[in-house]
Structures are given as structure tokens and as C-alpha cells.
Length: 358
Image (tube, rainbow, N blue to C red):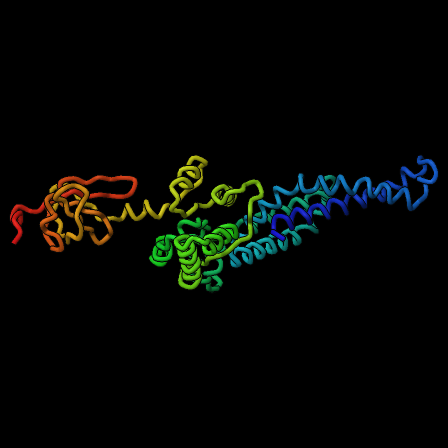
């Protein structure tokens, strides 16, 4: 059973029990006014308990479902160190409140009965907040070593992985470089989609799906940040993209993807998107018209007489009059640089000194 369904089921049970107990207590009040045989002790109490248990089972998920879901989603994104630190802070706050409770309770009414409770709430909240914000510094003072992925100089924010970026494979190399700093989250429905692609009857799709599973396994072994698979599956959405956007908005975290459509839709809804293709384009070699490059012509171009070469980062270089230099390394002069949706394209001509092939 999924976590959200379990929480809703627990709320229904609690609502039925609480309202059922209230109904049982009300049985003493209504039984004298009921006609026989409904005024029987057992029948009256069971009837009132059943009459209130059903509304309680329906009302509790409506009243407490959303707050508990938000609390759960915040807790699952916390590390063990943060949870322990919060517990320590809460305990310290309540201990201070207990020391103040006795003298405060001796104050005259209405302060005596109320102040100890308010002080307990205030100090407990203060201790929890302080430790949640400063637990790294406190652990350093106490000489408690944090795990490597929770070093004080690194941020630990969750990032959702899309199916496309896992299949692409470059996310493993990017993660190992250390540019991404945060926990990598793979929802169960993304993993299911990967498995579905890996089981496809089409050979190409099957190979892509299996590659994605291998990349995910590599991430779990080699990534300096934890890779976690979560079972959260928003019931309000059907498509994987919609579910990813809902989770990203709920957790306030970015989505890592290569999908152009998901990138646009998520951006329109205020979700931060980290696109590996945009990252690759951003780190490609920057060249300007007039600069010289040394390239190796490997294939003919689309237009007559053109040759095509590639830079080390994969940028295509179209060499005018470069067909005569096929399978040769030459120096070229950049004439134009175009940035397209597919990437950067460079146009160049052979240098004057080598216009005539040797």
C-alpha cells in the first residue's frame, strides 16, 4: 500500500474510533428518549456509535489529510542528522519549560494554569527551530562528525530525476563532477516507466530502457550524493510529467530533465528545471568570427563542396570548400556562429595559406 493511501486509511480509522467513542458516550443521553426496543442500553449505544463513526471516517481525512501529507513530505526530505537534531532541540526546550513550570504554576489565576502550557509550547518550538537551523555548528562544537554528503559547506536539497535524463546517461558524469549538490530522488513511477521501456518489443526502445537502468545503478554506486527511490505517486495526475511537476511543487525542488516539453510546462508553472542539454550548450567552446581552429574534416556537408568537422565537445564545424580536404586536419577561420535549438553550429573557411591542397 502506498504511503499516502496508508495515511488516509489511518485517518479514517482514527476518525471512526474518535467519533464512535463520542457516539457511545452520547448513548446515555439519547436512550431515554428512544422508543422500545431502541432504548435498550446496548442497542442505543451501538446505534449512536455507528451513526457517528461513518461521518468521522469521512471527515478526518478532509480536516487533517493535507497537513499530514505536507508534514510527511517534509520529513522524508530530511536527513537522519536533521531529525536527531530536531528531537534534541525539542527535548531541550521542553526541559527548560519544565524547570519554569513549577514557579509559573504558583501565579494567581488566570496566569497560573495557562502560562506553563504556553511556555512549554514556546520553548519547545524555539529549541526545535534553533537546532534545525544550526545543527551543523552544534555538532561541530560537540565534535560529532556528519556524513560526507552532509558536510557544512554543501547544500542538501532534493532534486527529481526525469526518465529522459536517466536514459541520456550524462547525469552520472555531471554528478561525479560535483556541480550538482543534493539528494537525487527517483519516484517509483519513473522507475516503472524505465522498466516499461526496457521491456518494450522494439529493440531500440528496449536498449534505451536497459541503458537507463544501468545508469541508475551506476548512480547509486558512484554518486557522491545519495540516490533514493520514493513511493510518492500523486493521485491527481496520470502522466509522468504531470506527477513530476506536482512533486516538485510540493517539495519545492528542481527537476533534472532533457525533455523540451517538460522543461517548458514546468517553467510555466513556476518549477525550477535543470536541463542537461542547456548545460552542455553552455559549456561548449566559445568561438567568435575571425578566430582560427584546427579541425579534422571527416565527412561531406549538405551543400556542394562543404566539409564537416567536429570539435572535442561535439560542436559541428561546416567548412566551406572543405570537401577537398576530406580526412585531413587543417586550420580554418571562423566566419559565422549560429545558436540553434539543437546546439551551436560553426561555419568556417580554410585559411588562405592552404586553400590549395598539398
